[in-house]
Image 1 (cartoon, one colour):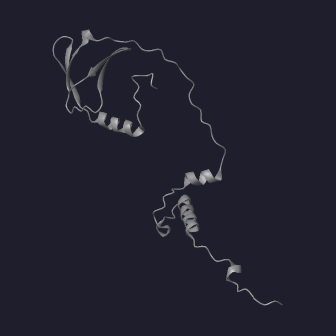
Image 2 (cartoon, one colour):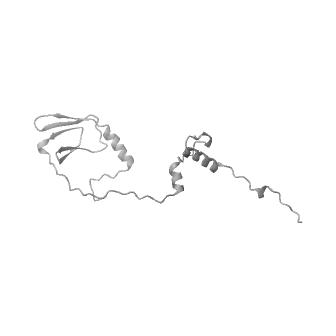
Image 3 (cartoon, helix red, strand yellow):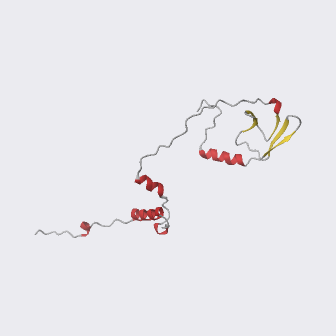
Length: 155
């Protein structure tokens, strides 16, 4: 990844924050003469660098926005053609062999804070969860041999 300068490495949390930030940006374009436009952002924030892309057919020009206002001159833009696309085969699902343990884990909600008595019984997974929780939380019973007194005498 280091060799790709323009690739943004981000966690999914960072990406979600950026998407939310991007969604809140409001901007306008106003004509300022032949081939000239003013671009203005209402709620500017320097958290993420902004770039406008001007599209003409299959060609694109990028214009970095260093501040909340900028003048766009169409005659000064360098439009680039489409890059060559490489079609790769699509991903294919590899299904693991069936496992009852994995199926039960996937079907159950493993939340453990709610007391077992308060769990619903309205579906098979909920009923199974409740009974498994009761089984897990049961108190161990003393074994029958441990409760029987030992005889100290011989026969």
